[in-house]
Length: 287
Image (cartoon, rainbow, N blue to C red):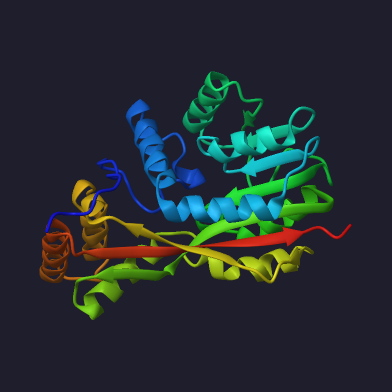
């Protein structure tokens, strides 16, 4: 049996769960930006990501003339789609704190003739007036925030009456990893969680948006992001996470090597399984 086809995650010494946090913006050089771009492009090819994005777009129902904002816009793929929906008189702005990603997003928008624009900003301090935004989306940002509730309040602040927000994020407590001794897999995962600011982001989203004053839809979107075995072979992330677990004492070197051997053997055989579930929450500002 050969490994399943699918995008290969980029190999890069600094790749880690916290590589998109604000504290790491500016690390490295053009090679680091290229790694981030390749990672986002690979993720966007995943059917699970596309399904959840389509669900969120339908729930947001952007209309011509509305103002739309994408917080953590990345490469701008979804903002370009929103910009087209609110044309010709609408406004589409992407907030992206990473200057390298912002530059690439702007380049792609110009190349494709999109009206989307991109600015610097922070999820907890958005550069918009109260009630200025009709439609807002925020994808896989909250997991990188030390104070996600502050961001939820900020999203609610900028929404206009009748405005809609879609917040999509992963919950790393939903990880399924096979094969491997269950105890070793658990300790490996727990060590990984401790390196992330907000690893269980998704499960808290409904209550955080409610606490910010938004009405939350009963329908919660979900999609399991499944990494093809080939991606496990092509990326050193699993090895680096195992090394980090050893350094902090969560695993011994022998235990880490045993776990890695099991995972890599299964990846080569095409039988490895790794998934994390993404969820989508829709919040609405009372009109």
